[in-house]
Image (tube, rainbow, N blue to C red; front, side):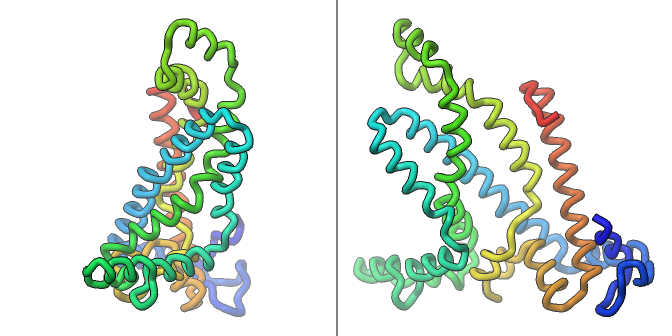
Length: 269
């Protein structure tokens, strides 16, 4: 945390954190007045919002499906297969995307061409970037993300299901009134944490996927910090941007927690 003070200093190579001159909020003003400021904010929020909308419920749905499977061997096999993509390197995932969506030899374009359609430049058209990015992220993480929900479901008292069956409840009614109610605290806590990260997005995968043709929709705060901090060696400026990002995330976390506490009485503290 001590190193964050270079956000209000003019830190350069050869300086120490203590010897760098103080310049106040210059870097923050420069970022706020930057021509890229609103584009970065918009792209970061949109990408993370899409991931929240599509990526958050899918692990829950998958966990519910797995919980309803009664054949143990098939259940374990399905779980193991769903976990595997999470452990694949980001570089490999982007390579798989290239193999599927490449213009020249991609499977998708080969199929489209065989059906008489024109090839699509998926990686060169900005309208496809967010779909590819979010979709691949959901595919990679839904299995691993379901672990915590499956664990929560395993603690549900089986007597509740037996009583529901005696009362004539269907499978869907059991899921709605027993399973979902049992994992509701887990869902709410994870939702709060996800809302608290709406302004955060890893730069590695985006850097591997984007290009000048897709900067308009792909450039986010983390990639901007990477370019200004590591490539241009403007360490103080990138620290200021990162600090601003962290403060906004923290504020969103506080608000989401307060709202959840008022609505559902479930909160982090």
